Image 1 (spheres, one colour):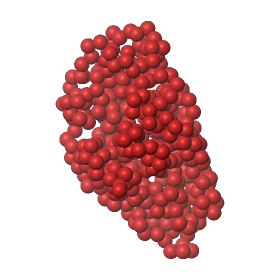
Image 2 (tube, one colour):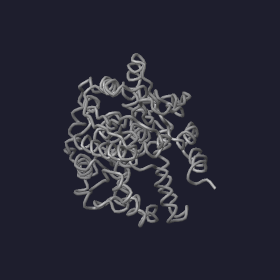
Image 3 (tube, one colour):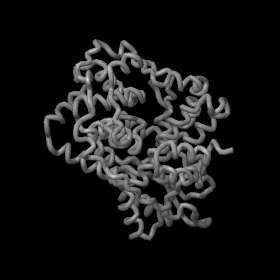
Image 4 (cartoon, one colour):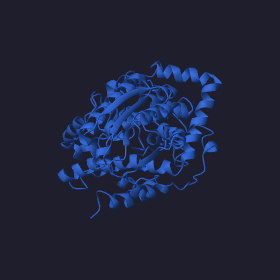
Length: 407
């Protein structure tokens, strides 16, 4: 199972998928070993090797909207989750705090979770999906739902541990989609609407060879885990501030740099497309990866896509640049800026998640050294994310008209 590791491969995969995209709606729930009817673009879309908006635009050139509406909705779900979490940052922080507390307890459930992660659950389809996750960095969306429901409602394990497991291994895991999808399966995201795995659903949509011995003991008569509703978080919206100086660009001849990170690998297709830079850097923080326990496969993938982004940027902006493996991201970024005598550093906006959590310290260090940090938000994101304050279908109706589907 191969996934694009550069922009050229991403565009080629998009063309390949476009040949069968009209079959996505009818085939998307079926989980086979070859994963024939998924786009295999989610890791590239997640890191923005290829933009959600250009994926949709490309497919609409080949099909009518109704023919690929279901796939377009799935792309918009990723955008919706990201926008939704931006207005509720406390959800992410609460998840991290609860996860740390659970891990520090050293309870029996941690041993059970470890058994499942080692593909020793005793249930064939669960072990199959676990092995697939660790070896490929990917799972079919329906398989993710089954796995999460088995984890939460059958095995009575904390959803936070499951979200952590997926975040460490999935190549396409981003804080919003991953965290909020696990909350949805648990019954927290849409209160009273948990997702329950069932024998009938498995037998209908899962390849029989994946099901193996069909030991359904753990999932027969599964019920919503008790106590879930008691932990539900109030849906309090916190208004998001605009990016600082996102439309303010430096004058010609002022020394400025471009910082490329794994949250958005396409600065040349943004408001920065015509900006002039003195130098460019792509940083991968080993300390940040270790803090979140990111798998070797995902680290290797991130290194590949960052390298591609750096090479493209150097070619586009006609300047030199470096790919640096660093321990402490804030101090290393400052050191790079000082060494190159930069007055301003530009980077694409990072949304709620580990990288954004580092920004306060980065801003403080830059301010102390009189260096300006400018976060650049995509115009499409700026237009549609405000619609994510409510439910998905409100977002879908409003956002689709604002972007590719307008007119």
